[in-house]
Length: 419
Image (cartoon, rainbow, N blue to C red; front, side, top):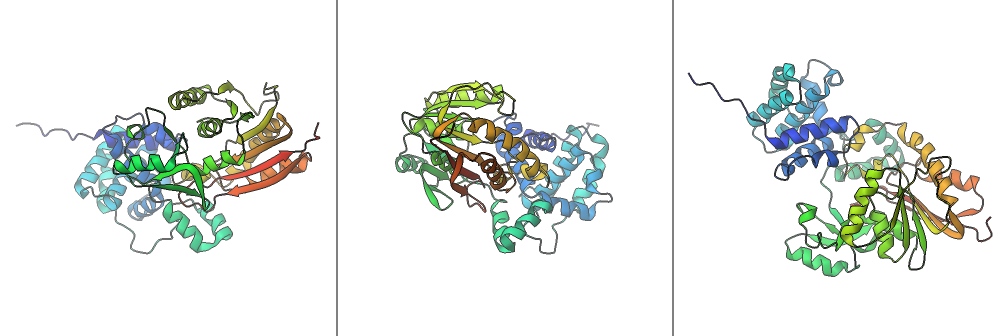
């Protein structure tokens, strides 16, 4: 009698499972997904991002049929369950295929002992019958603080937007957004001028999904554009840098704001703490055909080692990234209520050290891709209280966001007679 062939797990599901496991350990979903092959990436992206964007609802459905708390399950088992539940409840995968693939994924991720448990649970899982809060797919601590700030209606609209795939932001190198939009439209893509915070960003476009691989878009290889949130471009523009100005981009990688400053004609020193991030930024500079001096610098060090002074400086500080939850949905599950305050301790040191390298009369922009006041307004307020030679010019806030990420930025000027 011939043996029944062993079920074969699809590579896309395995890539998604591994990426979600990596995200559980604090990794970045997009970087983990890049490890998969090009052919399997669409399925892997669909599953991994879908699970992160629907995790609250998935866990609620799974908990309703589980005989033990989900937090007691091993990470590989929980990842397999979430992917299987997502396929059953939010995808078009046939039920038998969703269950079978999840069982095989559980085995492939190193938990064969739990395959029967996964099979039984997924056969019983069903969508909740009651109406769920619109913020069910966001951590409770975050939802509660923003409900208090902006109310149920605004928060609900924000959370619903973050459950959908975001558009792609692109910055056109020569600034001719209309011309480049026409080229993309001719390829069948849906394109519109980028508006961030209610203001159109020059040379920036939104490309609606699905847009395929970025590398396959017209003009990518020729360096005619780079991918960047238009709100981040607006923050770089806030510096007001141009030809003849020497600018410090203190936490520069991955380099989008550096490119924006260079395209405006500024001379830029781009620094970052991590060598590998500087290397990736150098690749982007080379593709676009712009050049900047790059240097490894730790701005939290007692002596960062930068001795020259600059006409302007940009501090795009390391942060919780809570403003990027639509583009990076894994972030919402890897942060806690105390993280914004904890990050602010690092941000204050960086801001102080960078500010010391700005000439009298110079400009400083502080920015974070987080809407949390502890990382934005509070950091700027503490800095201004400790540095009377600096004054606040203006702020930008993108919360609640539309298509852009929820950034915060502040522009400050140093007194001309400062010493």
